[in-house]
Image (tube, rainbow, N blue to C red; front, side, top):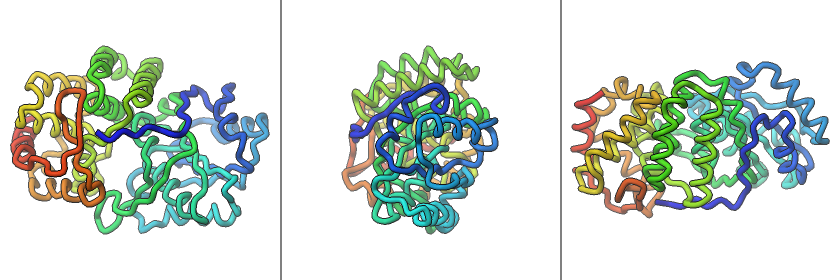
Length: 356
């Protein structure tokens, strides 16, 4: 497990552009703020522009021009840098400096693209992340890199990108599609499987109400996830598989579903190595199934049949992360392994193909 102990504030702020002063307090030291927003969020959140306008006026926040709106989804990371260049151009045209801030508002791909541009424009501009999907709130917003795709390789181009702060507003998740909501739980379960068995037990109890899209339960899940991150750090467990599955599907399979499939693959491989029991696999699968996070498995069977191509994801991971591939040593514990057990993964893929 690689701990991602943050050196930046992480704040849970329901209705961040409403009565809360959390975001304003975090932006208080910024001379100007350039907003980069996810088009899906803008279109699906009624009155967002007006709400933001009132908020910045009430708190004396100076905007560096009009918001930059970019499309969401993996396509903006695979467009030959066009979306990243759009953001970078806006940063340059606004003459942002080291005392200014880019406020990135959106799902994981928008956070990546905005972060990639902000990290390179004039050698780096501060960025505050405001994730809007459950998956981004639980995982993507805490990445210490920003990445885009190139040469058919997921996250091939990476730059260091540590946010100045992360503000999590669960209200934004109310506007996401059902599949995006359901798959978000996979990120929480992945963190629990890698770092904290007690968190897994808590998520198990919350799953039925999470599946019913209860906003208060999402907030409970977020509080538990953020507390675990603060105490034990994060983990990249199963991300090599999630990235590879997503890439081999031509990005038709969303990353959220890839995370859950990758986690089950890791658990099956851990059974082959004797690190976890079969009961652990069944337990985690049931949590993921009950909340809908495993709905992508039936559509990923053709990818899971490409065993050699899929296992190349291990090599791709090791090129970028030479300390090793995060691997389960027990339920709730993981460590980086420089030489992953490929035969265990082959056996795990065979097992995974036999179920849906």
